[in-house]
Image (tube, rainbow, N blue to C red):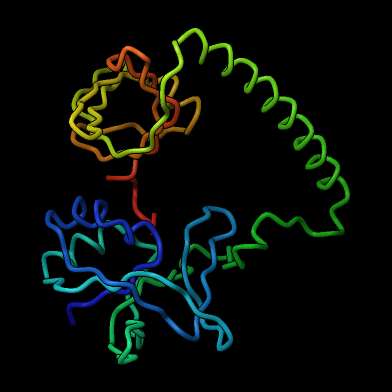
Length: 241
């Protein structure tokens, strides 16, 4: 079997290329009889049977043994492959068999929750609800203050357009890492401190040649770059589907 139905990060051809080392053929597909869910604590995406639902994604083809090994390592120990029928969604309504990664729930007693429910708190936990309300209020205040600060910083930086793009970590030392961003015919380099990254995202440190998704602002001079957001996506510790 050389086919995989992808519904999470693997719908991105750049991620697939980074994982397996080469580009693979992909086309739109639909998995009927399943719904997309999330792990309630770790927020990993998965699918589970639901006869009244469907999941839209991509059918990846041409996967050999080496590519399967790389994909299995990328998904990590919490996912296993399951063979399912997939609708490629073209005029012929062709149904093909393909593997799909499903959460194994080996980390019990945590169970899988619906994506729209994973933020819910049990109604009997009144104290938790109070804490949640206070936290939300504090978050709103923080966002407002951050917006004001960001606006001031935007003016100080000199304006310029904001882009979403892919980047690669090209250097790293004990204090910072440097990203190379390619946009159209321009190449930029931007540095972020490990302390700032860890404060924002936790303990995940970057590796050289690691792929990242970035949001950045290019100054009006067309040369200066300011990092606004960085999401390291490979290698990311598994289970990122």
